[in-house]
Image (tube, rainbow, N blue to C red; front, top):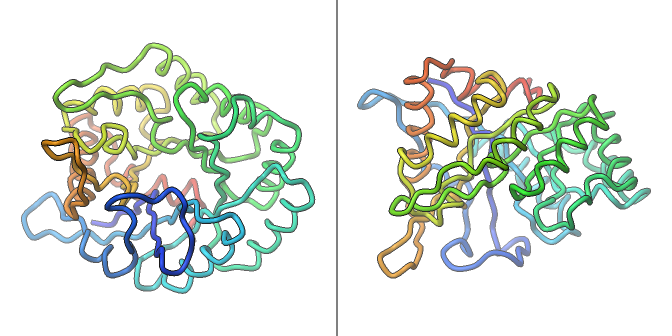
Length: 297
């Protein structure tokens, strides 16, 4: 089976600076660690050939180009076919210069300006829209990483720039509770997800929910959220992403968390099994849609 992991992170704190890394994530996660975190097939012994889209890991802003170069240099070992690079889209001429510099690098298929930490409405500011239009003009995708309450901002951007392919990360980070205390999908999140999906230039990654549960999740807990995403976008605009290694943490009995290599495989199997039970096109969800959204050659 072939798969494309549409949301893979890689980093090395010994090479680049990541102010947000803490605990077990403040370690090297690169080619060797990724090899140790492979995924298996539906049948015992079945291999899955996994390629990936790397998504910027929010290193220091002045190192965004260095990050993209580092990932491209190691792509043969990690299976990375495309890079969603870090970019600030609200800097006017600086944004133009940065995008031009990215265009000179290999494997760039999109950019991400991390919106989850920005004020509400930031994606609607003239400077941001201008920068996003420049992304669209280059034929790249934009990864939208937002909190659930910011989904209307992404919908407004999709309406303003119908030529921009927008890929929603992590289903918009809904509140899902934990395996012991699961939360049902909130009506506001479902409404806003459907409003975003009404724009045909949008896609959604089935990723990140284990992290939203703090590493305490199970398949039954996440199924209602996967169903809501399929109802909103249709299965043909959904794609699997591991969010490795962020979503590879597990919660311990004392609320501590630890990295576990098998979590990437567990999420892969959860999404693939759900899609199969629902009669969705598993091959498209695990491979084809990511190739389409990011225009992977």
